[in-house]
Length: 411
Ligand SMILES: Nc1ncnc2c1ncn2[C@@H]1O[C@H](COP(=O)(O)OP(=O)(O)OP(=O)(O)O)[C@@H](O)[C@H]1O
Ligand SMILES: [Mg+2]
Image (cartoon, rainbow, N blue to C red):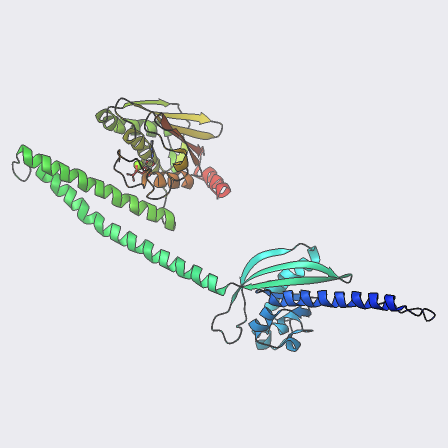
């Protein structure tokens, strides 16, 4: 308040007014303090020397000290930094201080006036005899108080969230190892079963009659289907765990596509589908041939599977700028608009009441992984009862090094 001039004797009304204003300011100050204290995340107000000017209750509870042991201290001492205690130094001069994420970020905000938001770091200090060094999410905001630069530091204890994330990762790794082991173990006996059935079917183990042949052929088809499913599950596991190794080499896309069309021709014929191909000559490009064959086979077999007899399936391979564009179109059942974005998810299958078509829902998720591992992208467009078009855009790279550059750009 300004000092009153000696000659001026304030009237009762003026006194009452100034007192009301002071009361009001005081009430507001208390309200703000109460809010500051009640915020469930730790808040610290620091001045330019990184000395603590104010803290809230959450910080006091975190360090387990009283306010007078925290206020007017350098941040490291206020927060009871064990590293400076061990090094017997003062906050800012220790070996670790140069790397301390808290100080580094606070300094940066003072220098740049740019806030820091939600930076996660693990504290070097154990608080309140906790066995674990806690994890924090740090936000730092510059503020000006009474014309002087200050910093508001917001420290949110996220240790439990981090522990839950670690546990989840461990569980996922265990699950992934379990699936890989089981799939591997299944593959060997399945191969033996399939080979055994081939020997009996070929009559190498003695003559079989027509009825026996039919049953054995049915068993063989199912054993082979199971084999494909196991391979799909193994592929998904490898892609998702980053253990999938791709064999990138210069290959001919036109040649590869023609081979796949040739292989699928019989399947299409059996299903009463007209399969056509329009394949442009593309210059050699780097890709994993087997994986691209797997991708094209999955897309074409879907197109054939979801198109009723009498329909058409076509494959197009084109050059477009620095990309190879592969289109697989059919005149089949189509996919509802609401399902379009979900068909690439694992095990997702469009519900078709009354006309269920067999499958596991893994094919497209493998296709999406193959495309992404090649630095490409895939689109789908569809209209119910009219047909579906899948378009794959693959970068055209002349050398493995060129592809590596594309892959770093696409992440
Ligand atoms: N060309 C298509 N026309 C209509 N629906 C399609 C087409 N391609 C995919 N779908 C829908 O997307 C779903 C997922 O396809 P995906 O290839 O992943 O699984 P699937 O063919 O059912 O089984 P899998 O390929 O594992 O044997 C399919 O179940 C089908 O409903
Ligand atoms: Mg499929």
